[in-house]
Length: 113
Image (cartoon, rainbow, N blue to C red; front, side):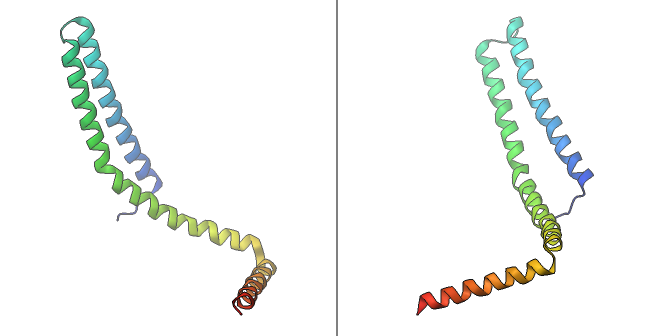
């Protein structure tokens, strides 16, 4: 999977927004044509439905790829946060954490007996 920088991701989402806004405009234009009498209510609903179906199909095609990109980024940048939290805890906190893990293991071992 490709790695996108923040500007590339913003451009992708902006493009998807513009495409979806275009679909919304088409749906509104059908309504306007119906109000002028050039399009019957039946055909306005029909074409609006076709447009919304195409919009949903279009969005679905990108959903999995975008989801995977976001999951990869979440994992990658989550490591940055985890390192920062480790830094903030400091060496004394690390010893306390290791001691509490050791205590929990002893407690579990005693329960098994």
